[in-house]
Each structure stands twice: as structure tokens, then as C-alpha cells.
Length: 472
Image (cartoon, rainbow, N blue to C red):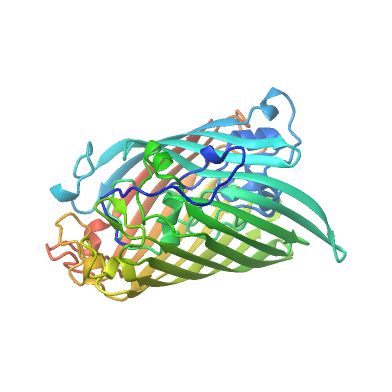
């Protein structure tokens, strides 16, 4: 979808959720990581659940913890029952070429910015034996907005079927893909931290951001014999008043009904290794927006059908001294933008109704002693040309003179996680990751050279990011 600077209002969702905590569910903007309250509750160090002792990649134990609704215990003392945590993300960003005046983020310079990107408050942990939650409230210091971030409330159970152990549950969450315990998707995919002010490609499949900005859903799931994982549910737009309170009224117009989500994943284990492969499906039908308001189908609707394949492999050596992982996904999206392409729509934003937008992302990580890490990632976005959708005609790094969404990038990172282990100082109350990340673009918004028609090249958006994540 074209990333518009307009912030369209939405009608209230027609899906009513009479559950405790509905008002706590909202946007998913930044990946969630290991929080000290989980470590204190379970009595386990962060490395028990997370690759690299902070996440968001999950070990087999971490997947078990998520599927069981964050209810596992084992910790002792008062801290085991205090489920609050605080997270601060600080960054220094340097872009190869200065951002032009039209594209500069308010309150930031054209380049070389040192800033606090976000501050989050978490409630994360067990509520009862069968209910747990992960709730994140974030101050976005770039957008100057309060955001209800990654959020999930689970009701769980366990039993047997045909002689197999079965864990099952219901997840009330705010983004398709939240329920996936393998974290090989947009919501949990690499890069785990992104620059809040650097130029980014102007297109992404709807699962890559738009529905995470305005969704509210219920997903039922089952985990059979720790090998087969299935889930199925539906989402709808959140109420516009709630979105405005939390500054998250970007994205498509309101949904016209329930947006179905389903997935199937198979995992297997051998020696120190485990692997999985999954298939995921999503369909959404939305009203386009015009004059900052939902058209309520006056000019037709826009629909998005996504079929995604995910994969993952982990080698976790003895005592977690050597760890190697590969994760990724392929998302194929078919778009029918009848409402946005209608000649009757005064804010027509698509040149044609039939559109394709696909993405392939793969990343590999290596950790030594869950402390010293390296990551390499590859990301490719491609689709058909659409001048109205992708060519903004603006000298602000976002336009595509070819009207193309095609972008290709490589990402390289080294990081250091001094805490989060069994013997760590101040365990379990502090965790930290320091990282140096470099993003290299070979294609940006349709071309390697002069992609916007104002002389900006893909390599001009190459970005060096120095970051610190601190969690208390």
C-alpha cells in the first residue's frame, strides 16, 4: 500500500468483543522482546526463552511459554508476582545522503540524529492458571504519540486427543500473525529494530504494517504433540475513537466485515536442531478513504488476499555456547482495489483495480554464548507498476518515477547482550542489547538510480544505525 501522510478516520468496528481488556488492545508497531517480568515469573534467565538472550526469536522453551499463555511459573519472591517492565530504545542514525527538506521528520535534522526512539511500559505475565497477557503501551518519540503496541491476552487449556498431548487456547490480539509461536513473520521478523526517521520503501503487503495499525481479533489455536500447530480466527478494524487516542489512525479504511486468518505449521526435532515450515492465509476487505473519512463502500471496496509460507531452522549447541538460526517468509498478495481505482472516487489513489505486491524476507543469526551476535538479512519487495499508487511526485524520498514498488535491501548487524544469562549481574531485573546495524539498498521504489525523478539513488538511503535497548 502507498504510505500516505493522511490519517483517515474509521467507523467503529462491527465486531464486538465483550472481554476484559478489549480497551487494552491496539497497534503493533515495534517488535517485542524479552522482559524481566517473564524471567522473574518463571525463574529462568532470558536466554531460556530467547535466542540471543533478548529476542524476539524464541527457543523451543519460549514457544511453549507463549502457547501456554505466559502462565508458566517457577520464580520465587515478590518479583515473581510483579508483571511490570520498562523498555527504552535509543538510536543514532546516519544516512548516506541527507534527507531533502520535504522529507525531514519534524523536530529532527536532515542527518546524523541521536534520539530516544521509544519508551514502553509492559504488563507481561500470568493472571490466573489459565489466563495470561502481554500488553505494551509505547510513547513514540518520533511520531510524538502514545501507542498501544504489541498486545495479547490468552485463555488456555490442555488435554489429549487420539492419544496425543494437545495444548489449546484463544488469543485476543491486535495483529494477524501475533498468534504464531515461531515468530517467522512480519510482526517478529528481522530487522528487529528499525530506524524511525530513515527513508523506507513506499510499499509493503498489508500484513507488513497496515492491518497491524488498526486491527482487533480473536484467534483459536491448538498445538498437537509439539509438532503440529494450527490456528484460525478473524479481525476487524478498531474503533476510530480508540485509534485517535493512541495516535494510530493510519492505514486502510475500515474493514467491511470479519477478516479471516488461518495458519498451519509443522515442526520437527533432531539432536541439537529443530526446524519448522508453515503456511498462513489472510483476507481483508476494506473501504477506501476519501477526504480523511471512510467511504463506507460508496465507490466500491478494496480487498487483499495473502498467502504466506514461512520457514525456520535452529541449531542450539550444548550449554547454548554456539547458536545458529535461519528464518524467513514469502508473502504473495493479490489486491483488488476497486474502490481506490474508481473514477467516481475524488481521491482516486490506484491506476487500476488488479494489483500484485509480494515480499520475500530471509535472515540468519549467529550467537556465541548468547552474548556476541551477528545477523545478515535480505528483503525483496516486488509488484506491478501503478503510477497513482506509488508515484507521489514529491521530492521527499518517497516517490517512484516508474510507479513501481520494487525494492531490494541487505541488512548487516553485530550486537552485544551482556545480561540475560544464568550468571548475569542484576538478574532478572535488567537486560540490554547494544547493536550496530547497516542497511544497504540495491533497489528502492523501482530503481537503483534516480528512483524519485529528483536525482536520488537507492544507495543514498543506505543507513548506519547504532542502538541501545534497555529493559528493566
